[in-house]
Image (cartoon, rainbow, N blue to C red; front, top):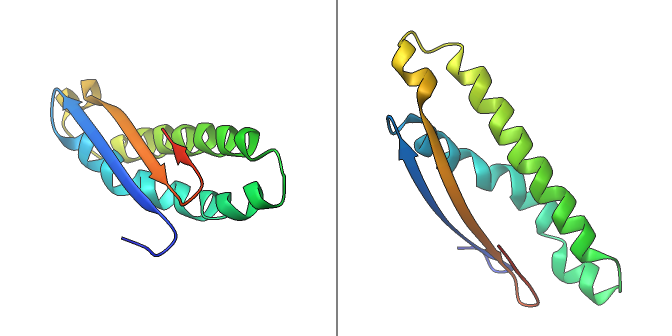
Length: 98
C-alpha cells in the first residue's frame, strides 16, 4: 500500500496460470507512474478522465504486447492458448479508476 493510492486486481487465467501471473505482476508497474498524478490533475482542473482513459488503454496494450513477447520464449505450444481476464482498481483520495 502507498500513501497516495491503492491498487487491487482480480486476474482469472484460463488454459494455464501463466497469463494471469504475468498480468498480475506487470499491470501495476505499467499504471502506477501515469496514474499517481490523478489527484493533482483533478485539483488543477485538467481533463483527468481523458488522461486516465488514455493511460489505462495504453497500459493494457503494453501488457498485451509484453505478454505476446514473453510467449515467444515459452517452449510449450499449449501455453499459446492461455489468457486471462483482468479487473483492476486504482484508488486515490479523489478518484476510483476501474
